[in-house]
Image (tube, rainbow, N blue to C red):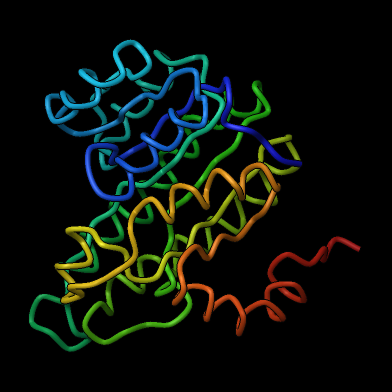
Amino acid sequence: MGISVQGKVALVTGANRGIGKSIVETFIEEGAKKVYLAVRSPGTTAEFTRRYGAKVVPVQLDVTDGNGIKALAKEIQDLDILVNNAGVLAPTEPLGEQVEESLQHELNVNLFGLVRIAKAFAPQLEKNRGALVQLNSVVSLRAFTQVSTYSASKAASYAITQALRETLGERGVQVLSVHPGPIETDMAKQAGLEEGEAPSTVAKGIVESLANGDFHLFPDPMAKMFEAAYQGFSDTIVTADFSE
């Protein structure tokens, strides 16, 4: 099972900067019919509307607002591909003073945001036999001290993504879990990473992985190191069929 972005309608959360912005640009370059730009402040997408006109539709969305997500899912009925890119990072060590507050905030956005989005949009993704793309991270597989709570939130998100793969897969919906390493974004700078791969590396990888029907995407050089070490476990345990 694979899906091309050409001629499809997509929605990208956190679409106004970083990886989300690059996903929008790449989808349109690859022939997407329309992309909903789901952001907390639609005014931040003015650049897109100037460049792409009617091919982009800014919509207000906060992934912490369950009622708002449900309302948007009722308003949008032509969705083929949903990319849940929105996320937050609050750099905190595991014994830091603000560790509990950081973890609560990151879980609310990075984990519960995915759950809220998936629940609301699953019916139309199923109807259109579409795809759900979740931006996770290599830190979902290996925690790092300075981003310990972020690692925890992404590990939890990855666990839910695996479950969604089985649940939605039975309904004809493709699920893709994306695990970038350091990418040149504002979030990476928050984590103290001054250098990284271009966001387009992730965006182009998503297009290719969707077409191939993949579940995992490790798009950049560091991520591919993780992939090489993780592949055997993934094939034997994560994507194995335990129903028999």
